Length: 266
Image (cartoon, rainbow, N blue to C red; front, top):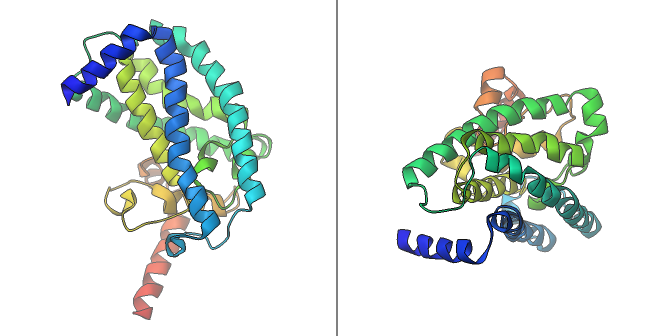
């Protein structure tokens, strides 16, 4: 496996410049993972497949889904791509590299764990600030246009929010100056997580059923259903920040009531 990764990486660094890999390569990888993981949930909603696992009975109209995709493409090409290109010198200055040798799996794992921890902390406070009255009305309300989220709505947001909360994702890598392959792995994991959190389905195989403190779709769907002043559930991947500051009490109470009702019906 290691030799296969090294052979593939050798091909990339031989045929493309560091700038091309870090900017264009990262953008293409992001778009591929995002749309390939998000579009199936749009299809499930349209066709009504696996509806027993859908968290909300309400569906988005085809027009609303198409609006989301159109805006996403606009934001990705006009905000995300220029931002990647503009931040390249900063990441280079912080130590990012694409050259050999590749980092060990221990190094990669330690850095990814650190990124999750710091991203959860920064995202929680940034997200909570966005739920103050002025910022919600001016910026964050765009993301909450979809009270019934589906996978692709995870990145549907005001350009200012893309920059604001995007900082939570890049601050970890900016501090450690990772190898590009580590940055790519982090990006893939982060995209898959946020798509899953917005997918609108809670399956028996969902990670939140097995991984302690993992939020997932059920946790974040609650956040989209409620008024901005009462929603809570501000966390990103892991929910320890909501637990520490008590901003998940409404969700936990509702979940407990549902579990008690289910027990009474059995």
